[in-house]
Length: 343
Ligand code: TYM
Image (cartoon, rainbow, N blue to C red; front, side):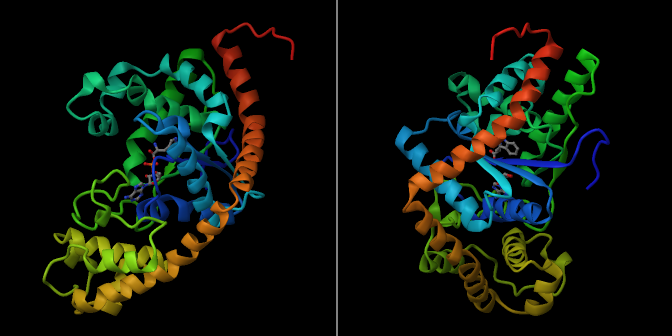
């Protein structure tokens, strides 16, 4: 991995525990988090519960979703002995550094964030202030660990550019080389998994139609039914990737197949070019069930023991805090805060 010379490579990423995780989260993020762990680089993964409450969350559902998302990480292959896995609110450095960044980032930068515009919708006056400054907290998540590499799906690219801008401005304003300028890691064929009902819209947990997404908790029959009913066009699959250009739904299903099978769209079309969806969809459904059913079964098993999940998150939080706290203290020093409280 290439990185700025002064900073040791360290991977950080996060997922919001606001409702169940989707196939998009799995292929665009979770699966790739496991790959990073397997490459032996230091990996820190966070369930960003403070981000989740930028839109209303029922407290008991939030607690459940946080544990369920933790179960998804573990079931997908995150090993809490090799990666740090925790929930954001257990490490105060995130919120503290976010305040510093509220004073670094400019209103104009945040006004350009498309996720804010999408989520706030027409009624911007009524959006939580937290939703507007959300990207500053995201920058704090990453920079509190001096993380250098951030694996995410394509939709997070703009937020990572803002994280870079914040690091550059902080370093410039205070005349230091303190924060790394992070590398977004947006790789693979599933950086933007699309809705099963509309190939021009991202697959999302907030889509009102459950048929638009595959949830990691869906059973085999539900997965098969959702793929069978996925929107497609009447043409057979092309022989080459260029033939998918104006066919968003077909391209999406081919990309999902390739990502699940760890292969390329070219290889998928070599096998299925000329086939209609009547024969492709059942094969895709079988593949999805083969890959996802063990994860959802393991999640159910883990969820039977929430105390063990809480223990893992607590242990991860203590290890995360040990990294972030000294970085935050140095940041306060740079900014000019008097630090004299007895420890
Ligand atoms: P969130 O919770 O919306 O999504 C978590 C991760 O899943 C990816 N993703 C997708 N990838 C491909 N196709 C899709 N349809 C799809 N939907 C979601 C996202 O790109 C993301 O990588 N702001 C972040 C969470 C966050 C974070 C961070 C990420 C907070 N702090 C620090 C990285 C570093 C978010 O809302 O992701």
